[in-house]
Length: 167
Image 1: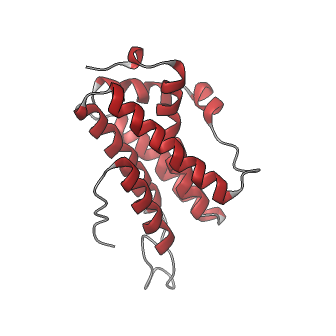
Image 2: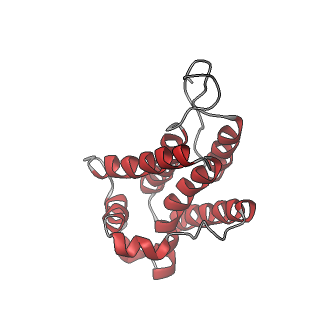
């Protein structure tokens, strides 16, 4: 069983930043105020929901414990105000790949799979928090083409099957 102690401080930071960065990727797509708020709430709720599960590996529990430390997480929060969205997205994908590489090197296969799936589920839940198009919800879709593309990119890096399910 892998714990936080198996990682250097830089590796641990990479593991903490990857899920948050992936969620921020979705927030960049939903740049309208209501979309941003709904997506941010969905991201926070999804993190909280996973914390309550009893089947989490010790490594995921360690990561989630640090997510409860708001002061620590503020240190790692990206500055979206000055970020070029395209460069920020590239940086996010690089961070995701770095996290996957670290997991493959130091975590067990099960721990790696659980954390990679958790990150993808966070992104999917966040992306589905808003609806696009239509009028009063009629004819709208849960995932727009940008979000589907983003999910495919992140799913590819995480080596997760990206079955997006029904709209």
